[in-house]
Image 1: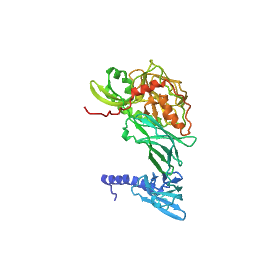
Image 2: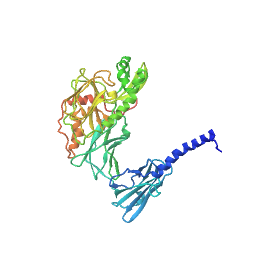
Image 3: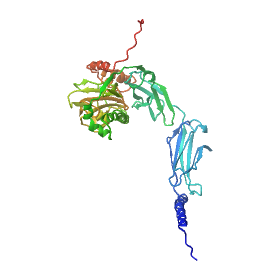
Image 4: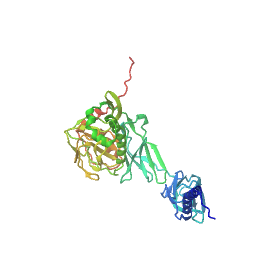
Length: 478
């Protein structure tokens, strides 16, 4: 007798098939996975400090990672360093370890052996495996720095220079200031030169620059750098935002911040988040530098130009009588004729020539050792990225792109992408005393330099724009 299956039994059978298909596929993958895991190690140098954390990353897409083990093979000994098994079937797993527990002596040469297995039934049921063997030498010797230049005088918002030597090779060295890092550059005589900044937004008590060096083994040197700190008072300014400015910038700001919002809301987005994004972009541009000085002679300013806004002016913005924002103006504004020709402040290489948010059309010239000049709000750009330019060469025309409300040049100086007061670098007396002479006193080779007697006016302008803080007068209370 034939028996008919019910609709319910058909559904049950279909359900089992739906469950079994992926299960069967998973079993198929596990049994037929012949691919070994991919393994990488964070430390690939030939020397290592035992205290340096090493990260092993293992990946296996078909079956997931089952285990990671690490051993050291030293002479006739096998030293187990770390081992971990995983049961969650994740495709990527990590194991972090140090060599502290091995107690290997200084200079010991050994093989670091890292093995990762996947969760398949390959390798006779133990899983497919990958083994990496890295020959290493124990190196606990910390690099030492010897400062060769005299302690610099540095004003808040300004720049300084230090020249030093290292006792051993380093993969990274320079000056740390809070969260900022200013890389140093090795010269032909073996010394390192580092330009660094006293951030405009940091108090004197918090300005504690550190000389830093990291060698390939992971040993770290860090020591306080002797500097003569000087505070400086920056100006404050009140900016009332007129509607005609918002109308003028409507199309430009809409391209920067699209979406349905009021004119003032869009302005605040440009003045805030876009400004911060632009600062981050400049930090990246600041890393595009060379290890030699490309500049020579005094830095030039825009000729026949009147000074406008100064460096680190603190601005409070008002809209219809209400306070809506606060920002700090970085750079030095110079106003001349409309669409005036802009000369390169000094010799160098163009590393940026394009539009950048609040800066509008912008040119950045690298002068070497992390020193760069910036020219913004331009109406025309006359150079290309990678082009070498000479001091005084016309590179652009002034304009009012970006956050500019009128035709002018926003001129700036950056140290490794961080803006500092440009007035110091426009003063040839300051450059000679604080940069050229400090390099020369160490036996290094600085650019040929002649002090420009006309720079006395620049020095006076600097004091007017950013006066040093006045010391309190002590006397009888009245």
